[in-house]
Length: 214
Image 1 (tube, rainbow, N blue to C red):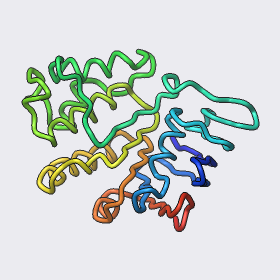
Image 2 (image 1 turned 135 degrees about the vertical axis):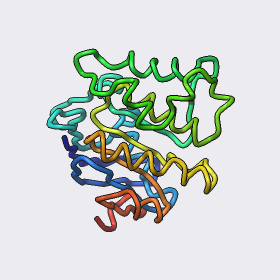
Image 3 (image 1 turned 60 degrees about the vertical axis):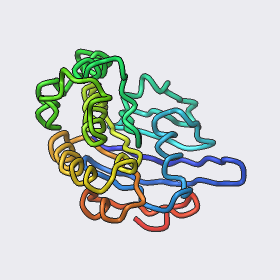
């Protein structure tokens, strides 16, 4: 499974233009704040429309300005993990996870609750509510909920940015497990060089909306 991105967009005077390809594993979008990293993720997810371009995942075209193709976000099967966990506070950990699982079409499921909870080390947390979890535990549950929707592509927008150093070190090994176990492309946005060096096979450096190095 791979993805192919070639997009352009404008946000006021800011011009974004990026084209790259990646295979399973982690591709890092690296660069300072305001470089356009999150905008690229939003275009892939379908919540921001490119002015021009083409986005394809595993051969399926999600957006093509020339062919007038623009698949709705909920039909793209793209998983999106944010800086904050965004868990449902009134639900247990188990029900948060099952919410993601129910979003996946049965014929497209490749992840089971038992496998994902073991992979992320959260099996012992299932009966608890999000408010009783540490920041690192909340983020692992949030990752699990997204994975259980069986996305074809995983977008991670600075998933460790809201955590202190101890919690970052707690979560990093689990992201490595996902990278090695799931065999799907992961696009990982960060401005932390240590995360890039540890996680990514491909590094795309962005500056002022353009690819500076790859």
